[in-house]
Amino acid sequence: MSATRRLRLLLVPAGLFVLAIYAWPTLLLLRNAFNEVGPTGALVAAWSLKTAADTFADGFTFELTWNSIWLSLVATAIALALAYPLSLFLFRTTSRWRGVLAVIAILPMLISGVVRVFGWLAILGDRGLVNGLLQWLGLISAPLKLVFNWTGVTIGLAESIMPYMILALLAGFGQLDRTLEEASRSLGASPFRTFLRVTLPLSLPAIVLAAGLGFVLSMSAYITPKLLGGGRVFVLATEIFEQATTNTNWPAAAVLALYTLVLLLVLLAFSNLLARRLRR
Amino acid sequence: MNGAGPVLSGIAALVYALILAPIVVVFTLAFSADNFILFPPSGYSLRWFQALAGNAPLLSALGLSVQVASVVTLCSLLVGVPAALALAKGEFRGKDALTGFFLAPLLLPTLITGLALLLFFTPLRLTATLPGLVLGHMTVTVPFVIRMMATALANLPHDIEAAAATLGATPWRVVRRVTLPLAAPGLIACACLSFLLSFDETVISLFIAGPRASTLPVEMVRYVEGRTDPLIAALSVVLIIATLIVVVAVERLVGVARAVGR
Image 1 (cartoon, chains in turn yellow, purple):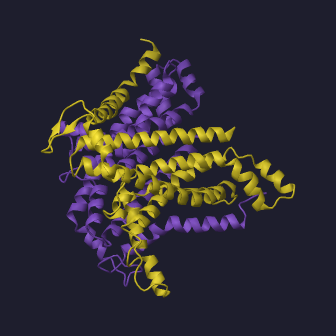
Image 2 (image 1 turned 90 degrees about the horizontal axis):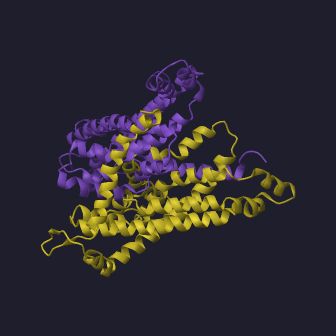
Image 3 (image 1 turned 120 degrees about the vertical axis):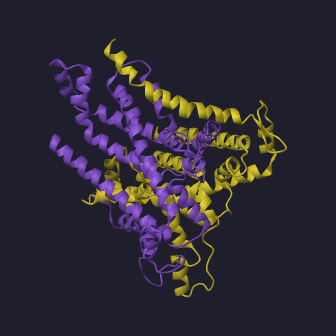
């Protein structure tokens, strides 16, 4: 047996694992989208489009779609507005603390999502940091409703996707040619004008890719909408989980999951295409 | 034009404050003496740490999580490292396609993977069992191990292995006596990160964990859904400190090992 042949044998356990525990369940998910649920709630094996037809005939599906897209757009925009200057700072700083600062920037990635959500409950809750501060300053008399609604979910989601966007932006900034900025400055442009006319256009592909990533992560996030939404925020992700577990309506969950996946793929294709166009 | 400039640094400082705010608040709240989430707390105490030590469901969930993460780490390395070795050292047709296939599970959101695993495991009675949770977590950790170790192994100095082979070592002996010892720091770091990935995995666990077998993140989600008191903050402090110790230990270990290797 040749060395290459033997080397290839090493791939077998991982190959079998991915086939059995990933590829096969994913095919099962696809198959389940064609099943039906009988009037008693029992699962009926079938090859029909009835579940899909029912799902898309339901106005709630479009409300969920709109909710998911709108929430993801706003969260991504907020996260980008914060992640961009931070990434640019990390890219430019010559501080010897740069390594530590970079780790702190992506720290939330290393901390459990449930812990971060709990932190936001303490900051935004009725008796939390923000309401306490505003009442102490006498700006409000009754606490503002900042959690268990869209506001809380948007803030929590923006924070949770930021580390990933920072990494994407930093990777993109690697292609920024500093000599162009220096040329602009030496030709008399102000720092702000240099940023607007040179830095920003040059980093546009990185921005598009980071925004695409943030959007995809927001659309598929479950913990943040569930816990910070307090059962009042309905998005595709929460509905998929609800249908699969509480309602045990697997065909409906499968249809919604595949539908979400198609939305994400379309968006990813679009953002990759846009980034490639911009890079030219 | 060097450095970041005062305007950019100022904005960055504000963003850092936002990033650190939830963590700082959780640390403060863990030492609260109040019955509910009140910030700033009206008094400080260790009562929530004492409550944590007496909370049986959370402690048993912690035990299960440690158990699952240990088995997941061991199995992921056993399955993933050989594949990474083949991908890093082998020259064969379809290698790129194969790499894509192995890393595919990282592309789908865990929400979709979790649902697919629920549909697959339920008829097999694997939901809410240790093997079920382990296999579920491995859909995340195996591709992660393959990606990390394939890069690490490909970056190893080629000439030492070549020298060993020239001196008559069999390929298996080269792997055992040269490649793996050289890759040891990377392996240790990879094992620690796999452990953390499994320990923190929430969404897949929520799909396949039942009331009989819930991991710590699942139990924490249930707790936060039900009530809001500082108990979870105390637990969070313990978890964050444990995570930091692991991260620093890896950094030290890998750093020291690399220094010795040079």
